[in-house]
Image (cartoon, rainbow, N blue to C red):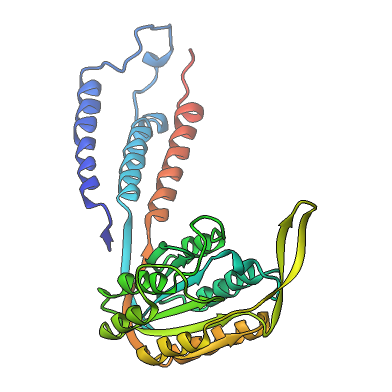
Length: 329
């Protein structure tokens, strides 16, 4: 057994002066009532009664309560057991296009909502990997750095939306930002999953330059082109409200194939929700082939035992002090 906060155990030293003060007060007779009443006690033999035996028990229970609480707060833990688990040792950055074209409705309910929902499923299926999120349109930024905190990661993914930055499609910037987050990682495998539905038309870094940088750092890039073939329904604001119009789907597949080829990744084309889900499942299986075995101690919290001791001692003290040893007046 060890303690998470061992310095708190020094608080146990406070019990010494408390016990000393109690003994001093008893020896000096400070606890004797000042009001005396007539009694037949002198006519009886002065023996040791049950009341005298348990007279000091409430104080002892109070000391046990304080000691047990201090130990519980110090958080005792046990790590006698070890658990072996398999871990991929993979760091993954999800680079997602959030330009307004992602509002097209050839996916249900639209491209960006479908991409978010399926990415969340992908995140949930990889509990041992560090995953981060980069979003890009006319510029790019990190939505969430690499983390194993699935709750935070999923919540940050849910907050991804269009219209929060300058519109456009800066594929190179998005990829470069993701690479910057991975380049110093010491993971066994480092991966970028880049999802876009357009043609690169903005940004200071060209997509192929970003791909070369990724290859330099040994980062693999999987590219996903999102959009139906031909035309896609797109909501357009008109003087009469939002109307759905058919717009041409333009995805630079040649560029995405080059990025994947340079980095040793693979290009995929998603035309609907089902296809996009299967692509993520395929990437999931491909990257799970790189596994390690790791052992780590299993910690068991023991503070509850001491907390229950404190609660029991306090309840027993209350019972003795206010019922068995109660004084009138």
